Length: 411
Image (cartoon, rainbow, N blue to C red; front, side, top):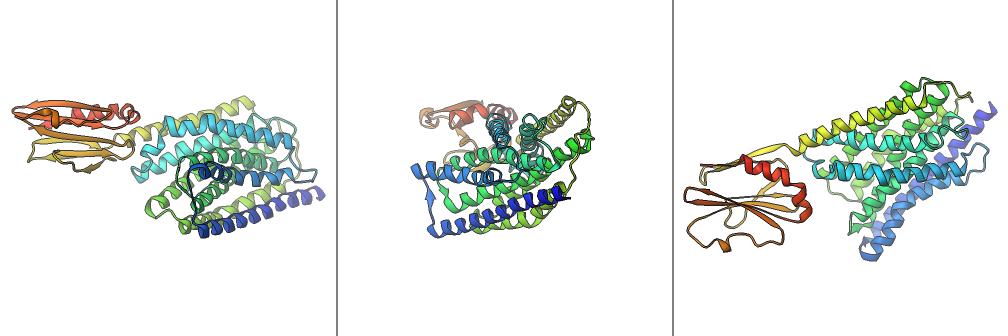
């Protein structure tokens, strides 16, 4: 009983500190709003970097300044933290941003955004947090009770959050200071909360057995919560102006809904009596099960990505005798001398068609640094399909460009 009381007090102190840190961060946000600062140039690089790493640094003090015998070994805390940073930087962020390019199609429809948030963002982030714990401290004697699952999973989330926050800060060259502070705070709190769910099941798997059920359950539930939160945050950002008030609303709503459940999990884990590690299935077998679940989810996410990018809309002009299919996320505009003009908001690329006949063509073809024109002759009419933009957009949109041309019908 004494050990249980000590353990309960151990986690209650960090909870109090977390609450204090959160209040302190909100006060800091209020001050930044008064200052009305916008980070640019050197200040963006220096202050933005500090903002990105400060939440994780504050949370890590919880682990480094505990004097109780039940405190996790500092060396293992550092190992899990660094492993998570490396996994996020080398695998997680490149997978989501470069391979799935989720930022290019994430907001095409509510369904695609919700599925992408869960299957790609949620599963990737939670599996890599699991990996940071599983292949460092989990098999060792330092993972010695239920609560350690939550504590080390939170440490893994702090490493992952640091990378996410750095990308966010440096992807916004003119960053509003107040909004930036709120965003990194939201990211830190949410990632830690999902890690608590994952860590709770890590502890149960090791000390209660049935890891073939507990670990997949923890991964799926944490990924689901992660995806729902990501989807909700993006919906708020799309439908409302990104400002201090809306950002604070997200923090308060998230804290009110999620944190009570998280603290209940921590208390439940802390009050579990010490148990011997149970003989369970092969660790390698269970790890492969989770890898399989992750790959299946990412495969489904790849299908969602292709489905989103391949959605099309029809354009038809009876007056000019032209019809074609174009990607649903393109915007239709106008351009002087053009029959039809579309623009890809993600690739800064413009697609236009111009009819020309019986005149000097040199003045009608766009003069661009990088461009491609396709000339079609229909009777006495010459149609020019032109795209222009940066080299990156050209490579990325090659298949879409070919599909568009294949859909053209000239009457």
